[in-house]
Length: 471
Image 1 (cartoon, rainbow, N blue to C red):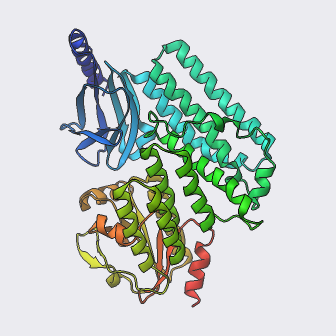
Image 2: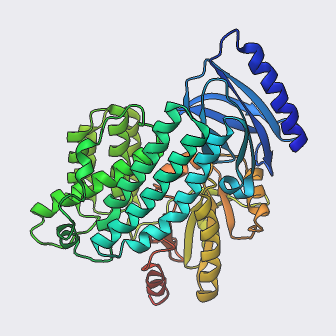
Image 3: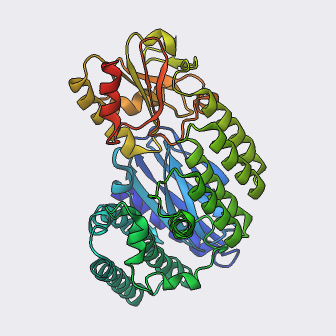
């Protein structure tokens, strides 16, 4: 790989110099994929497809982006993706192993330092979330001290990077936003993650200036509208503000995430604060589908759907939402499991009812959710030992061919006779309202639905299994 990088870097440097006298608004992206699951990568900018770039016989690629729009681009391979920052005259090379996608990703070439900074920041953020959940149990003043300390460390690191590398204003803007949005998110999540059940009482213990930064938030920031950290912050922020508003008219009742009133309040706050249609429609869709996919009260679903339809400008999202709610209403406890076709890894098709011979748990996986893919397999193995009288099956829902799914399982030694793939992923996911991917069905030996919205990792899951066994 080193020899390949040297040759490519020399070539890109030559090409870059040659183009200096012409149009300088371009960038090169190249690299090597180890253990590829497809023979291409997909390059996008702001959810718009730029190109599908094929790998050569040695799993390498090189691509020139003409008329570059500086900013974050995403490259996708095998259902996983990562963001890269590209600016004029960058010649960026990447190397990754699909088995450890993010953890193995390294950059070299022109533009490498800023992208290595971002990937390291991303990985640190992922590992830090467990720590944040832990310290959320502290009292507010102690919690603030901890997150202030984290914020100070990140700020110092950025200042050192700027002093050493003198990056562009674009890099500095995004890097600072990463620090800010993380810090704000940690504050917004505090009432929800704190172990106390009385969320209103928790809110009342917060210092008066705990959310003082909110007055400076731009809820219609076009620049960050497609940016994950910004969107993640807005979701936490809207949820928290809805909690505060809901507390004023809940008349002392304990807070529940599934309360219709709370969820309607959240949609109303989004409608009042956000005018950018891209940001607004995405927030409305996220919270509406999250509620509808977890609720089986038909009247409440219809009320929330009506509120969503009145506020959203996303015609495609509206159609999807109406189809999903129709599916959810058909998946009630006591109804028969809808028929759909799955394929085993010897390429044989089966109606789902034909493989349900006794009490059965049906769960799903996607390579896009790699952690859940691994964790669900391990969790099912544990449950199989504890509940041998229950059948557990796992189904891949990705829209790609059987061999690719089989390769992913084989690479992890996960092939078994209880693994299947959806024959028609797009229509079946909609008919079964599979959102989120953690959605799990429990059905009895007669294919009657016992639960259409369980979760392998919930505290209640094993109680649900025992209830089924003892029926």
